Image 1 (tube, rainbow, N blue to C red):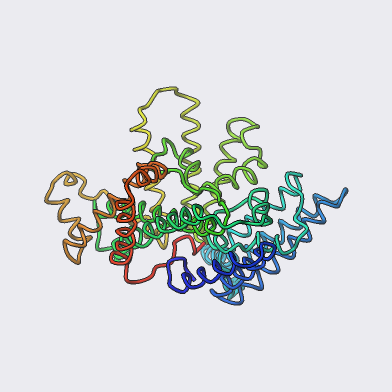
Image 2 (image 1 turned 180 degrees about the horizontal axis):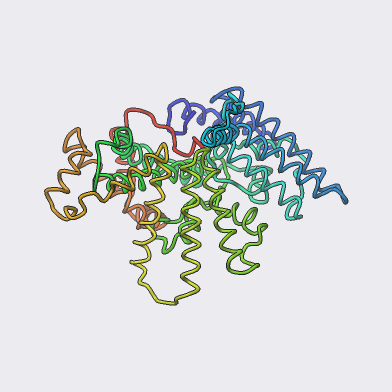
Length: 475
């Protein structure tokens, strides 16, 4: 059940109604059963894996807390089980296929086994969430949750189990254990946030995706500025798609009385790639910092070790996103650029205008998106090779118009709608959400409700006819 489908609407109305009408001491049970139903609705087999993950981490966390001599051994056991499970389901075939190709290239005739296993939905997200919980228990930052039901809900809480945000035990578990009281302003706030996310996903991201997908499905037909425009469109597609999902997840949770972490903070206004990662997928960035970068040594062991740690962290970040070499290159590219930024910062202290910094960062991120969006490294290399073909014509109106017309093959109305949607996306990025909210709240009731109705009508009439899954659901 995707958040942007009618079955989910029916599911959520049912859970919402029951949740707010049962005695408060049973609210967590409604959420737990609802979460298991939601997760199992994708494939019932997924439930077995998340249940086993829950039980193993529940008992190991208790063992770490009680043990005086074997805490580290229990931590290592938990890491091996969690990362081993993730490797088996997500990465085993990737590594065996890569090794097969390597062996063939050097003349060895070795056939490694491959597993035909389902990739459990959201396994990358809930695996990181439980690893963070286990490490926090080991460090003494939190005490382990003794109530198995609350811990199970922490692992599979349906608003964020599929694509995050990746929550901390100390932030989410206390909320799960609270008795929540129905508050009309909170429900309205959550509904507005959900609708805002739905608009970003169904109206902006999915319509831009039509152009981007068509180009990537027939790459050899495109060269020059049409490829650059496509990557510019994809940058906004993925942002509207993923931030739209997060807004919907946070809106759903808020309507149930919970507050999830804000996952985005105007990332395309970042002044460096390092700054970009403080604004993009914030829950993943802080996980990588606290549970990988700092344990590797962080910036405590000199400049070159710091640079190596940065490169390792972001290469693994790329691998976390997908079991394919293009994702590894995407992560490594970010790592290399941040290493370069750190080295340049040590060498020179020139003051560069923020406008130039933002432009530079957006260009670097857009280059990295080439590897993220491409199905193969071959496709990525094609774009890098042919994106600037005919550069001398880039400023000729006739050439620009011909390139745009090639991308928008249907009609000029499609071109106008997409341009309007892209402009909307950029405006939503430049103007903080709090400013937009405050402006709407100041308007008379008639104007406010007209804006709400207009947003809903746009979702209904401008949505893509084909329901598209969220991009990060694949990870």
